[in-house]
Image 1 (cartoon, rainbow over the protein chains, first blue to last red):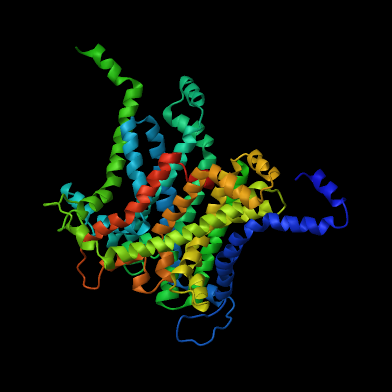
Image 2: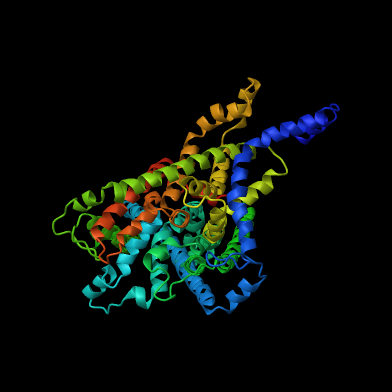
Length: 305
Length: 283
């Protein structure tokens, strides 16, 4: 309804306003079921998360829950196990999402534009299958791949290279590679779409002007897809921040706590050590980081829309 | 015949194509190894952790896992859980998308931004308070409670996708229905939803596939073994007795993965590979 029409309606008579309000209510009523669910099961837990994070709630052994202020957060920043989890989360995100999924996805998308059709189809199918498989199945597959008696060592033996117990020596890298295996398809799809939108003439005329492949990539292709790079990095990072099942299936955060990223640490504290309050404080920090990324993502989108 | 015949084979373009093919095949091989383990081991009763061609391929692993306890009950649980939650998500998303797509108001933009914002939140992070909340309101260890949460977690993205699809349906068509005296619900049900059939299919399949693969939510919220969906029950292969039947684990993994793989094939056929990106990236 245009503004003029609304104004005309408003001056129509005394009874118009309540009737209009009722009509607006009716119009927006389809929004109600979704809104109720979102408030109950999404906004509710987030609010509850904020509350519990400031209490000493435990699963067992303690009758009442009391307010402890910032104690959980102070404890977290003084807790070597928490700081360990922060560092591991950073490594996991950097290696698997920013370096791995993003770069490999871009490389695959670029190569696929030049490759022959059968190879392109084959690559697409294999990489997408890895993406589509349920998280836990992917976790088991990569577990068998990296395990001491697994395929990676078999390949290394065959090549006469030294073998290792990967899940013991480099657990965080093993789970990072697993995440690359599983998540690269998403970046590949985004970049394929982005590259397809670059007008052919631009790159061709640059080639005619004598720009080398590397120059074209650096000065033309990358600047033209920079928004896709931004959104892709954002979504990859958010996705990677909340990976739990993959790591759980492969290492359960171990050995010791050497692949214990923040979600695994949170689970460990809240459920295995029964410290709901402390675990929730960690969850809240994770949520805040995620929210910051979301805000940046929204800004990026706004620029694009 | 030397140089002249060889020249067309070595054009710049052909050389680039060859190099790209080689590079892609190398990466593809690396990606394919774990998948090869899955397929080969499922036919190998003596499967271990390595990729190897089965000595005497058989379907024994499949027949071993095709029992009520191992496969049928968890798959049925998955179906009930994800089917119910998907129905709820799609119904609520279709309803919510309607006013967001059709009416302008000062609330719709903030509402949409909030929705978009929550599609990005790491759901993993709120699982601890969700657990605590479910214990308090006695929804813990109930299939419907878990389905309600799964549905809500997927709702923001579903609304966003659905709204974008609905925006593509011209308003003229339902205006005709309105002049004929149809209510908004009739216009939505009889005119818009049938027209956006492919869109609704995509949202449904995508929602279902995401839920089917979800591990953390049922892992936390469901406790009784007889209620566990396949994503959680798969851990029983790492039994309490030490020895893992890898062949059976592979066979079960294939059975559990098949529905989602098929569903993804179905939507990618319909809309090209970038179906999920229409909503998430294009804004």
